[in-house]
Image (cartoon, rainbow, N blue to C red; front, side, top):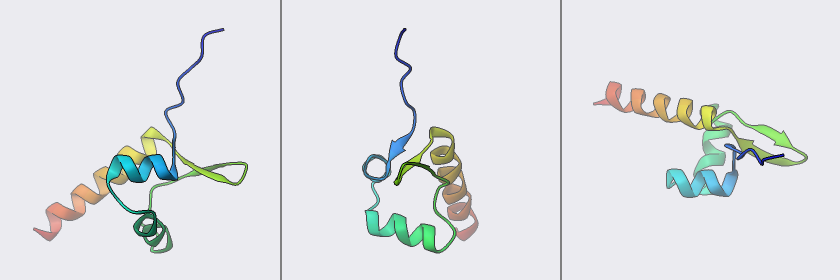
Length: 66
């Protein structure tokens, strides 16, 4: 059976990809602005869809602030 690539990211992978620190990401979650995530055991995973949604929200905020 062929392997299906996992499009979800670990917290570290997300932070590397988005160029944000772990501390900033956890601040975003505490403020209710972080990306949606799901748990695999005790580990947070962020889907590709949640990453894209989070990015669109941040971009929309930037446009409104400009």
